[in-house]
Image (tube, protein in one colour):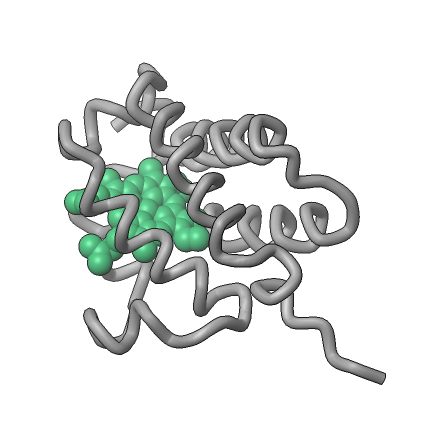
Length: 127
Ligand code: HEM
C-alpha cells in the first residue's frame, strides 16, 4: 500500500490559498488581529513553510528558521483558550472558503486542534 502524504494530496497551490484565506480572516477577527503584525505577508510566508512540513512535505520552515519550537515562539503573545478557539474558527472558515473537504480536511483539522490547544500560554478570558 502506498503511504498517503497529506501534503501530496493537498498540493502547494491549495495550501497556499488556504493560508492566504486564513490570514484574511485573522486580520479581521477582533480577538486575533490585535496580537498580529499589521502586515501579515511574512507571517503567511512562514506559515506556508511550516504547514508544508507539518503535512509531510519538504522541511521548508526548518531549513530557513531552524527547529519550529512553536510553543516557545508563541510565548511572547498572550494566547488564551478563547484565542486558540478563534484561531481554529478562522481556519475552519478558510477551509470552507477554499473547498477543502473530506478525510484530508478532518485529519488536518484534528491535528490543528491539538496544536492550537498546545499553544495556550495564558489563563483568563482575554489577556
Ligand atoms: C506566528 C498567534 C496557533 C504556527 C504567530 C504569531 C502570532 C501567532 C501572533 C507572530 C506573527 C508574526 O510575528 O509574524 C497564534 C495564535 C494561535 C496560534 C493566537 C492560537 C492558538 C498556531 C498554530 C500553528 C501556528 C496552531 C501551527 C499549526 C505559527 C507559525 C508562526 C506563527 C509557523 C511563525 C513563527 C516564526 O516567526 O517563525 N502565531 N498562533 N500558530 N504561528 Fe501562530
